[in-house]
Amino acid sequence: MSWIPKQTVVVPFDFSERSIPAVDTALELVAQPSGIHVIHVLPTLEPSEPGVIWSTIDNSGRTHHAEEAMKAKLADAMYQSINFDVEIGDPGHEVAEYAKRVSAELIVLPSHGRTGISRLFIGSVAERIVRLAHCLVLVLRD
Image (cartoon, rainbow, N blue to C red; front, top):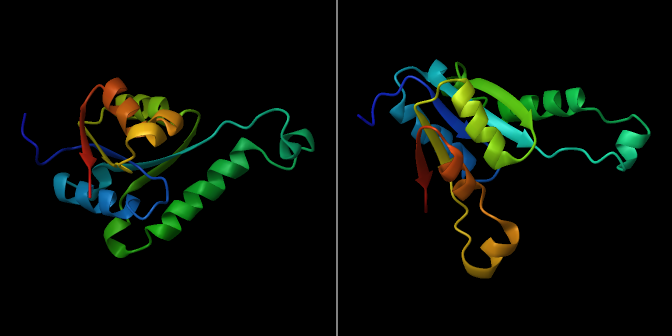
């Protein structure tokens, strides 16, 4: 299977400093910028959280806000044809499922490079995506 060009590439976006270079890498690997799907995964709200109890926070508002924030971060002209989406749940599972749903050929994601004890306690989203993905996964390291 050839690395380039791909028709559909998914890029998880967590608003870290490494997220934008991952999108830039995806732009180099895709046939058309419209084939890039940038996804942000929000955590599930707990029923006991004050915003949920008082009905001041809902998933619709959260997803809209996150999508607008992604569009603001990626406001340059070269990002205009990119697709943006927001899901709710576990990032590893949601990214893998989203990639399958859009028939992605590749997932491009940055790695935060945690090792040892910190990886055991924090977990590795990149590792889960690699394990669960139905397609190729390109993990970018510094």
